[in-house]
Length: 200
Image (cartoon, rainbow, N blue to C red):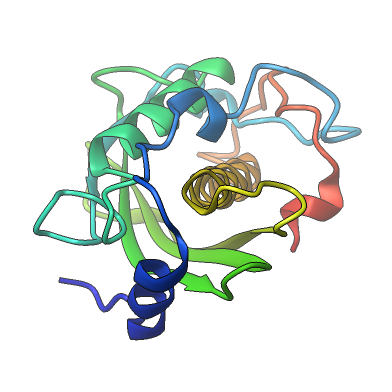
């Protein structure tokens, strides 16, 4: 089991209040919009419609979630990954390129003014060989204040969703940088987000 910060558990039990519901897949997924990039920043043609989600793991093994409350489960993170890849025309159930995601850390900092930070290690391999085309640790965070949302459980869920969404967005940026066999890139672009948010 990956180490979950002890401070997260203490703060959560003391301050969240109410029942924490599962994260919403649509709130963690990257929609099929355009214009995050300019020029020739596209996905490699070889990746188009050929990436499958091989495995998603990590977090609290007792409940299958990525945090103590099961807010972000392996299953709904996988669904958010699949939806995001589908929206960029990259997904295939049985793709040549297999994507794995493993949670390294999931941390809550603060109580009333809070921030959720996660770190995920991704690996992309070809089914035709054992060489890793991508191996990347990606950290992302999402913050909210008491004025943003009074109910602690809802505030926590929204921060978790936001951190996961930013993490997937950063993954897509990394995927767009790959060049497979020097092939031409497709005309598929990422969602219309502020590029600065990707680099935070």
